[in-house]
Amino acid sequence: MKKVLSIALVSAMALTGILASSTTSTVQAAVTNGSTVTVEKGDTYKSIAAANGISISALEQANGREVGGFDLIYPGETITLPGATTTDTTNTTDTTTDTAATTQAATDTTSDATATTATDSTQQAATDSTQQATTDTTSQDSTTQSTSTTTGTSQGTFKISFYDPSVLGSDMGYGGVAANLSVFPKGTQLKITLADGTVLYRTVNDTGTFANSNSQQLDVAMPSSSIPSYGVTTASVEVLS
Image (cartoon, rainbow, N blue to C red; front, side, top):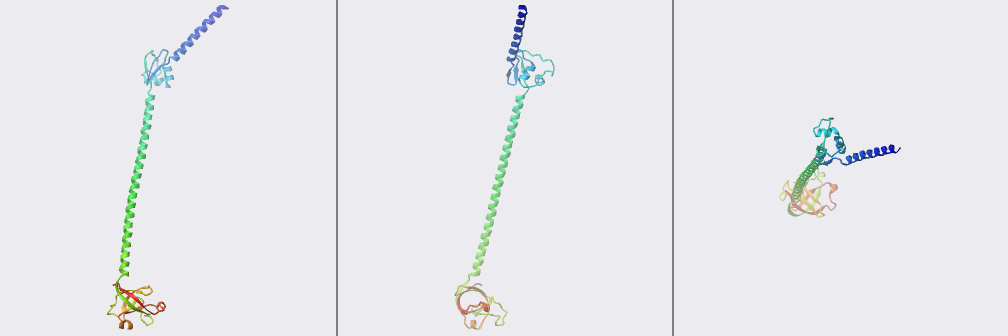
């Protein structure tokens, strides 16, 4: 019985030694140095591949070994790891490049938009300026025309009477005025401002009995319904042409 126990004790101690050795081997993992690892005692291609998250075949290819062959390695030997880090760096570089390109594209777009806006603003300003100049010129022309139409050479104060040509059987209309032709020849355009402020524009086209005998009298043509009730008044007269 004691002999059996001794054998069991020795077996347990041996098993413990084996487990400790395995544990020690596991603890003594390969030392990673950048993209290479230094082989430690107990390392295999399988353990190195597992420790670095890569496949055995990839590790074999990275070190020129036959895929699936017998991989004999020794402590202190340097094993090259596949370029995962290089790939990540490349991806990072690509991402950075893409970001820079996107930023540059956004900057170019913004610059183009700014330039377009500036051009549009300049064109609009030029258009507005042209329109304003045209308006000013038109306004100036209108003012000049108005002045030439409404301002003339003053002839003093005249006595004004009214008559209706149609009542006298004339078809001369109501745009004329009878005057002393020695003072205002036919065709003379007159601006007649009555005493009450009413302004009449008439063209000399006839001479009446009263006007012919009085150089300071004008007979203004007007419909009977429009002739002022006072009948006779005074007015300042200007020659427009």
